[in-house]
Image (cartoon, rainbow over all chains, first blue to last red; front, side):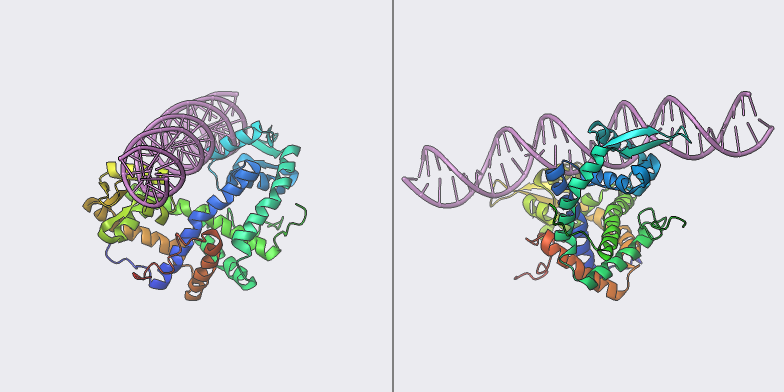
Amino acid sequence: MTDVRWLSPDELQAWKKFVAVVELLPGVLDSQLQRDAELSHFEYFVLAMLSEAPDRTLRMTGLASATNATLPRLSHVVSRLEKRGFIERVACAEDRRATNARLTDAGVAKVVETAPGHVTTVRENVIDPLSDSDIADLDRIMGRMLGTIDPERRFNPAVMAEPGA
Amino acid sequence: MTDVRWLSPDELQAWKKFVAVVELLPGVLDSQLQRDAELSHFEYFVLAMLSEAPDRTLRMTGLASATNATLPRLSHVVSRLEKRGFIERVACAEDRRATNARLTDAGVAKVVETAPGHVTTVRENVIDPLSDSDIADLDRIMGRMLGTIDPERRFNPAVMAEPGA
DNA sequence: CCCGATTAGTTGTTGTTACAACTAACGGTA
DNA sequence: TACCGTTAGTTGTAACAACAACTAATCGGG
């Protein structure tokens, strides 16, 4: 309890700025998406993940993992998106416990029309204020944090692009 | 709508990692604080801000600004913390519309006993995976993002340490 | 082939947050 | 000093997330 390593002034300053960004950024992303597409950032993220999946389909468990959601949370969100016609639930043939979530054509259209505004917001608030070397630094630093925060690489798609890994 | 500047591969990779950290970090901070102190990160942040303020006291509006909370949100949170004995509301003498939130002795004690575990969590997950130059890079990059996200510098304490600024 | 243990997912409850409506007090102006 | 616009804060409602309890299906022995 007494042998705590407090933060140095430099560390404290960087941490305070970082925590500020972590607090503020979700609100920035949410409000643009809410305003322009009536979607929360999490809902958009779910749709986007499905749109990149083979056959626009993912198991609920896999989708939950890919979006860092608990299964109950995902289940509720998918229900809402299903009511709005963007997703459909399809029973899984191989494992009858499982449910597949599949992006409908309307869901694909929604992603296609929503993506530009979202990317623009990301650019304005995150990417464009940075130089090319800043981007490289950001990538390296976030990769190091993910090594601790997300050891199972649920998120960090280091090998995700390789089909045979 | 058609002239969207999509993200380059490097930008996309950095963005994906960054967004993963932004999604995961709050959960990491929250669960440690919840487990060890029955406090959300936001509640801890409110207490910590008060503990650094002169006379452990801040106007509701000032506290809301310092913690990036809306006034209604802060009002509810302060009510909860008041019920638990960590904060007291004190009428403001100069402006009778205003309410001062003041950290009680129990609140100070709570911060003192909670801080070490919180700092340790921050170290383990954010600071210690980084080198000294990473810290400098992080500080610079987050500063640039805050320039856009938080133009009024509610958060970014560039001059906050100087009493006469 | 049947039983316990595990896995996949859904549903209900409770707490927290956002948003809107409201009250109270200040400040300037006629 | 009486009024109007603005500022400070609280309270009520509605949406979303966390957690727990539940159902249903699979797996792994005996």
